[in-house]
Length: 180
Image (cartoon, rainbow, N blue to C red; front, side):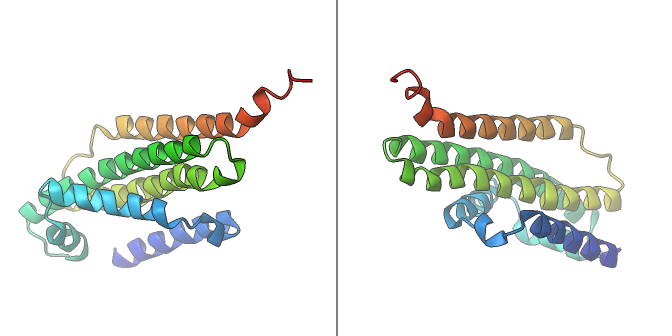
């Protein structure tokens, strides 16, 4: 089982890196700080037991209480990752609007909005969800019923970011066609 998880983890990130083509272009420190730091802070603020969350995944002899705490913690983490993605979008939009008169300065805001959302979706649905599902299988617990609403939220967030990004990119061209 551990080998299968390792292979799945490596395959997941290898395929993402291959799809990126130029992985360095996908690095943005502010987005990464928000996507990683905000959920960590929210987990601590919410009283999640991070050592138990990690132990429940890594230990083959976790108690039923530890498995339940791990399931709850990873479920919360996924929701917190989505919240961090939304925070990245909002921060990115503020940066873009602040620099709307300087097209050269719009890039960092767009990078934060897009990459922060990407990081949040990868962490929430590529890390937290599989770990939660693995713990649910081990505990014999039923699969989470609210997953569809979280997936819908992720989809809406992604559509919002794409439409917003296209709108921002087209903004400089809107008034120019009628000025003749």
